[in-house]
Length: 123
Length: 123
DNA sequence: TAATATATTTAGAACGATTCTAAAGCAGAA
DNA sequence: TTCTGCTTTAGAATCGTTCTAAATATATTA
Image (cartoon, rainbow over all chains, first blue to last red; front, side, top):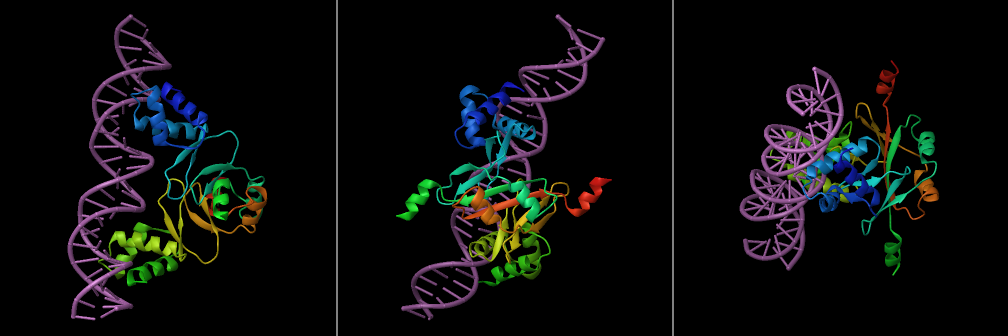
């Protein structure tokens, strides 16, 4: 765990939302001005492989990174693009029962409207 | 619906598996040797927007395209990378009930081992 | 401590997938 | 026909990400 990796982990963990590699790079340079973008990618891959953070991949969007405290999925607002976390209880078992008994894991993105956009759409 | 678009739709519809743009380009050139890769991408986008085919996006992989007969999700073999279709009855309602009452749609990729790899893993 | 081996970082080039651009072509409407 | 507006083509450009090679840092052994 080098100081670059520690910094990047801390940035992801303390972030409000879900950051892109570029966001993290920009943030990291404030602390370590000489850090290279490649190091950000290397570190993010390292942290993912070691289960310390999670990569979020959404159709047509740049990948983002998320702290990994509890297993959860993501909700994408189809209107404004906001990404939020969503927990769906018992989904693993449900998929196992209804779709594939041998499931190892799953990636889910739920599309909906965030409260703000839902309100706006009602006007 | 130009002859290029019709050809590309037919290629996607008659394909065994799930093709990448490059696969489709290669196939299309057999019929229309002068077709451009950009046309393949344009046509695929057009066909997607009009609900005639579907784009499959899986973490870290090139996008693929799928005929759209019934609503279904995809299963990725974590060992050999094979992609197959999976139907999970009542999933929309399940997510609505357990996770988000305002769901519009969802993208799901189930990770598992295909029968071949499951057999091989048992050895 | 010095010498060696291993891993990480840096900087920038390279890459792959996809989109953009500008020119040319085509189809339908006036 | 001529005009208008899509579509196609070819190739350049773009974006996000990975690779490369050299430099640096860290750990290991003598």
